[in-house]
Length: 260
Image (cartoon, rainbow, N blue to C red):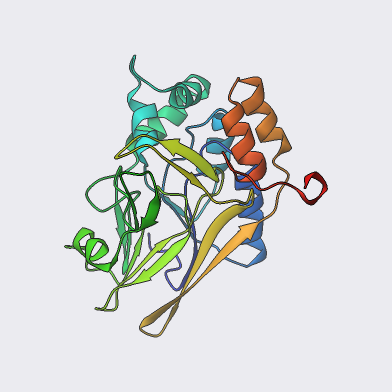
């Protein structure tokens, strides 16, 4: 992409069908004067507004998109789809499903490498690990570096955990997860049952800027009204999704001051 600005751009990921969060983030990106975006996938899986989300995504100029694991499952279809993926597939148009199907798993543009999980596995956490007790912890530098073998780009972008984080490797390479635009909390059973929750309903993304041979990065948490998206999820019988989108918590949320 010759018109992609590789000196200053936005990084978004894990929209999960939350069209209102995506709209808020795109407005914030425009307010910053950014004209280029890396989108790291998991665009639509979730009981909210998948068709509307892809309408916004596919119409956006200057966006490099790849697929996430849920995009892969939504595009493939089949009898064993989970409810969130099935909700998305049944809402999308044929053209939108074709767009999802055609997305690459990874992308290299200039000195930037983009993937969803790790370079070789869209289901693997790159910067975090899950303990047998279900704790989600920093993976540690050795494990992160092993997953980076073969990636010679100065900046690597990943997603999947929904947790914003930057790690600088000793050789100067930088790995950035921008967090999740539209899904601040989820549960998973692999490799061990665990919960990820950010504790805020704000939409998260990152900005990357080249400064000489170095990369400056910043994380932005954008407020928006999650009521419509939470209401759609609740109407679909998905109370956990509604709670996560509205509060940033799936379980263990602190009491409000008035309830203490």
